[in-house]
Image (cartoon, rainbow, N blue to C red; front, side, top):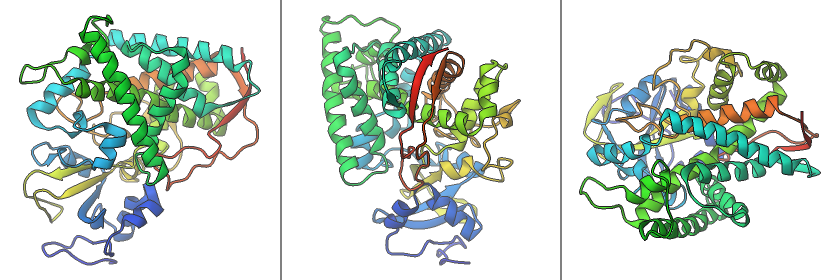
Length: 422
């Protein structure tokens, strides 16, 4: 077996003083490649100057989301907090504080609010198509980020002027794009976050001063007036961080919708089924897009207390990476995992641990992304609209995407032309 053994187990080790460069060179495939090579779902490595344990698969996710064994505090690197998540946001919390903050997000996911989200999604697409009809060609990913930015702000109750849309959408997009980046992409993400937090802090201040009225069922109202366990209002800065944690993930849906349109092009039989409004098919299609196409590569957590799993000793404080991409493409979990097959989700009875495109575990008490329902509903509404209401053409272009770029996106950003209403 390639690698060296730990002192207490036969767990393989990825050789090297530090393998960060290998991670950057292999991207989404770094963990799956080694799991395949070592014929295991656990190995150790050194990344970013520290020892880490990498785990993959359904059983690994079950362990990873055991809150008695793992904590999130101290897991997300500062560079990720300063670009993607925001510092000290809900993703970095544990215990009672996390449950209390998480409930703030879950309270926004009511059936009524999700139905409103679907309606607003359709209206934003209608607005976009009216403009796209006048354009020679449309860079779909870029323009869809604007669609999702307008949707996010409208649904959350955040005022957004037309002249601001381009900048705000670009800033949210840069935060997302900075996740696995070094150099210019990372620094652009940090600058974009600072600008966005300043914008949202001003809005929170206006709400609290009574200069801006926020509807009581919106995310803006909820974040502006939320009180933590100590009974105190969140600081304006923390309210801004958490409100952005509502807005930014909705803008990120632009990536999934872009990959969805590519899937419609490459698997034309799926378009026919979506156009016919086959019962339940849009749900199956959206879930398969989320499983099949790369989005988040992995998630991190730190060991809360010493324990043993798979004959490996997990020591308190060690950073552990859960392989999201590999788990969603595991042949032990999925039949023909490298094929695009929406029908695999017909009557699907999965668990919170074998389908983890946006993380795993349960919603209420765990760390599963509260915005997953928003993602699914916005994608369904978008795909139903794009297949049933609109015609467009795809000119010749490079639709390939890099598995080393995290997060990835088609090289052409997907160009469409001759957009018109049916």
